[in-house]
Length: 117
Length: 111
Image (cartoon, rainbow over all chains, first blue to last red; front, side):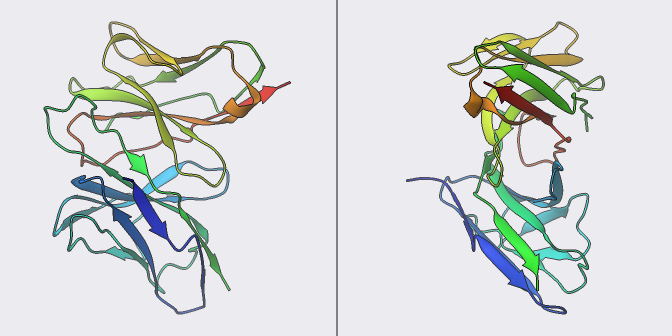
């Protein structure tokens, strides 16, 4: 059953702690994204990756880091430098390339809700 | 990147047709228009996508005028379960590039 799996569903962070959110996809998609969503707000792009071993900052990358060592995986680390990490985090993936019938449709995971203790 | 503007919220009643319009004045030639639906505490899911004219699938229709500076998502005969946030996204068709989701439109369907 293909899809995007985010874990854990809920995560709590202590002051000064780094935490890592997992995102795995078995859709054979090239590109992956991380978004942050605050209550009642839209999605804001944190990082995105078009290909393995390459990633770009989005609009709110400060306090976050990512890696893309495998095509299937795009973990997000929320560092202690992120002073307001409480939010709903969403991972997405998409195919790349010009000759696609479905153009740049993003498929999302179920999300991870991060709270600060 | 094309910026999009949508109404913040809309109300409707069950059984009515709902039209949500999105403005995207600086859309580029190779941009596609995609609409997503999001329920609380879930990830957005794809509804419909188009480049020009009209596209229809089993859940919605998408109307795009010739100048492509706006688009209208049409939901026929909405039900209570259509209460959600709807996002209009304009992005390159090749994928893997920076994308911007706006604030979306919160649709409330009443009985």
